[in-house]
Length: 64
Image (cartoon, rainbow, N blue to C red):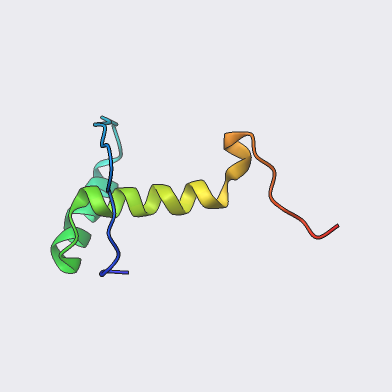
């Protein structure tokens, strides 16, 4: 995971308000992992997106 490249290509800044505890956890995770907060956030969002394709209006593939 640490060797994977994230945030490649065109980037766009997004500003969000999150709970202080979550923000503090991001800072600590960044410090302990040597990944930037940006990288941790994009990894988490990509995982969420892949698990919730229905939010994008896409149906998961099934074996029918």
